[in-house]
Length: 222
Image (cartoon, rainbow, N blue to C red; front, side, top):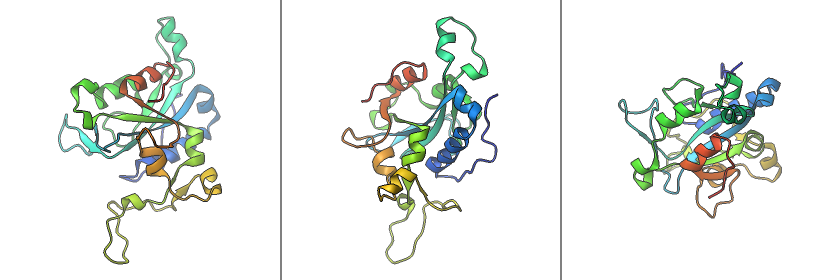
């Protein structure tokens, strides 16, 4: 059975935290873990200007939203490659699915539809708006993700605190292994940053290699 997000927490403009809770929920479900590999995917680039289509916040139909970064969840089938090799029609459990709380597409979507309608080929997009993808295993994301939400604060001229978008009602998230090392915030440096010199988690890839990975090829770090 395809897992649904149901009452998983959602806060607009805090996609990385929405995905954190969805990853945690799926990792707690034995059937999900045995059927799919669970990944968080952070989408950005070195200029933090990525164009995504089919987004709820698009100003008009067939128009892109320019995000500084975005986060989605991938359930990558453990059995799907066998079906493709045999040219068989895959079952739900043999498909790879993408969850995007901020998309107009069905959630989850089959990865082929989601990629086609969200990320046009790079050749059709100016270089500064092309996406890079940081693929992080669900376990690693839960263990190491940390955000104090400081990136969402307006520049303050006094001691007041004002957020660009209202923060979630729950406390800030700090993964246990990051907390054990005394850190409280690594979102921008270890997850969003796509610089070749960044020491982030997971693997960074371009659109072509991301699609190959969804097809169960080996992912190669840029």
